[in-house]
Image (tube, rainbow, N blue to C red):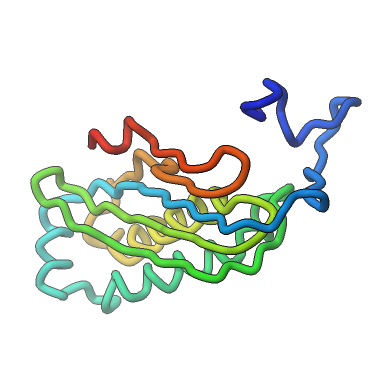
Length: 167
């Protein structure tokens, strides 16, 4: 839904799915960061920490996959605009106490529409890649908490997800 109008932005007056027209919007710097968590076994954490995963450097592969995911967002989400991203940064933090790996994806551009979907897609693809590379060790892994944690630019300006900062 559009915050300002209380209506879904991708539904036209006739109730049909519709790509939002951004042609009259101003070009501004847009940024978004998303996060997500992959819950894993102690064995996965140990083997990642000791670089013993048979498929190789899981974070290097997942980082590239996350970047590719962000760049290909409009190929996966039907009504997303194709965007020329100027920066994508994917990072990981092993959190052994919580038995999880935190992934973040930051996207940036100068454009007419935001990059939240790109950041969300990037973090999901990065987490899925980690799952793929570690599933032989722990097939019960699961993903949780994928969300936008910060956004800058556009009509709504700077926004931070208060719930995310508490985790």
